[in-house]
Image 1: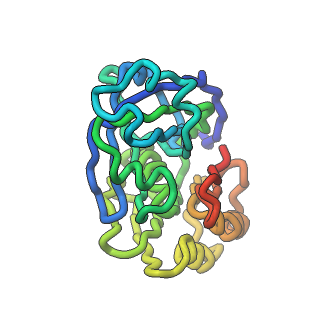
Image 2: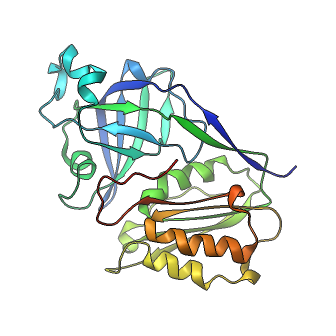
Length: 264
């Protein structure tokens, strides 16, 4: 049975949660675990889902001294926010894990993810809607930069044991490579950009793929990175004869625009 991509609306819920732990996975990449009673019932049906995370200053409700006012949705919604893909969650335990790229002191989310004390509060809204893959592709092609790694992890987790395909992930260098659990028939290849602009090395890899490099059968493609990846990603779909409505190609972020959010 051919696969399809179906959009599903979700009930929009806003949840105040606390930072429970931080794990460094690479020099500029961390995994945060959030906990809270409000996370009971949380779900994320689509591998490319987005939730909106609201970041109060560290002093606003840090530790166990938070007041009901600190946890109020109307108060949390006033703070800067960014969008992230849910990685792991446990509805019974009230827990959610997210991964963050942290580059220096720039922006809002990166410094918060790197330095906020355990117990700090954030607000989590969504996901508002999900794009769900139904059926099984004959082959998979996933490509992205660091910001797409949580979604790539979830696509890999979604694959059956006998899946075949290719994964390209752009990072700065060897120290930034992460463990990705892929089926035996799925090749994972890391692309190093060094000091070149984000998405440039990945774009070059996509441009180098010819029509003859297309995997056989009904292919699902997911391509997400800095906004510049959209043009070479769409060009690849055209060369491979993959309909745009049976693939995902998007800019997860945009260089120089900290308020930019990936389109749903």
